[in-house]
Amino acid sequence: MVVPAVEPSDETLAARAAAGDNSAFEAIVQRYQARVFRLACRLTSDTDAPDVLQDTFLQVYRHLQSFRGDSQFGTWLYRIATNAALMHRRSKARHPADSLDQYLPRFDADGKHAATPVQLQVASHADELLDRQTLADKARDVIARLPDTYRDAFVLRDLEDMPTAHVAQVLGIEPATVRQRVHRARLMLRGYLSDLVGVQP
Amino acid sequence: MTHVACASGVELLMDFIEGVLPPDVQAALEEHVAGCERCAAFVASYQATPRILRDATAISLPADIEASLKAFLRARTNAFK
Image 1 (cartoon, chains in turn purple, yellow):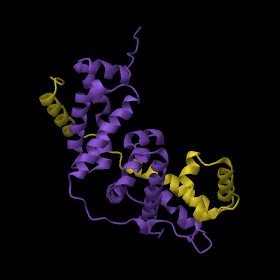
Image 2 (cartoon, helix red, strand yellow):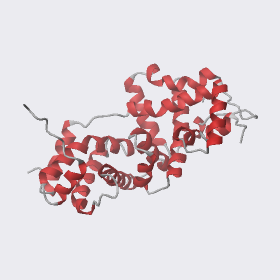
Image 3 (cartoon, rainbow over the protein chains, first blue to last red):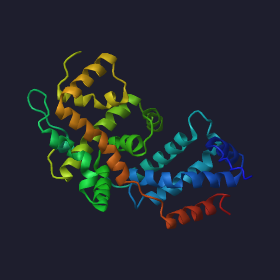
Image 4 (tube, rainbow over the protein chains, first blue to last red):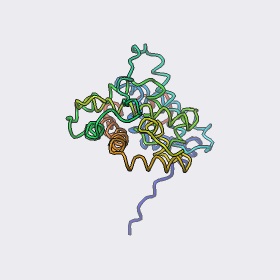
């Protein structure tokens, strides 16, 4: 009878790698490289992501001994990757600030939604109404246009699907601040998707 | 806390979805959304937005970039020898 091999946990691999087991480090790279690359693309750009990917794993290799298990290994590694991405972004000239406030929802004098229900829900169908490549290009561009602090919180919380508490740990901010930034980003992006399919937010 | 207008409800939406509002506020908002077609439509699109953008940016790691990473780590660490 073949007994299926049990994958060692992240923490087991991290401990072995910290003790000098290079194959354990290689297994960590194998396990996380695609996720780190995707995160790097979302936080920087397709052109910068390969450098962020390399920086991240070099930092992981150098700092494995300092991983104490206070947080999950994945959260620890995401913090390193996020910091590598932010450092990279800081070193680049920023594109001019470009407000997405025009995409925020509008209300009448009584605080009621100005748009009709049909207009309000159309963003839900952006992925059915647009072709895949167009949506991918537009998504990448608009995420890069978010204010940096909104972008970081939104990418980690909503695109990487991390729990709010972990995002707070990675970014070193309060969970309430994470929620507030993610909320603003969602409002802008929702309005942007509406606009893309031809409905003013 | 009993009255919720669409505008004030929208401001509470993230906290509402994450379930961190005080119970009476949570209940008032639930009641408003249940009776407001516009807010129900808004909430649906607000919740769809992360999913749509997540799928649209879900790229995979190209083989050449993976190879460069390994070459980079081989040169600078004791791994991938």
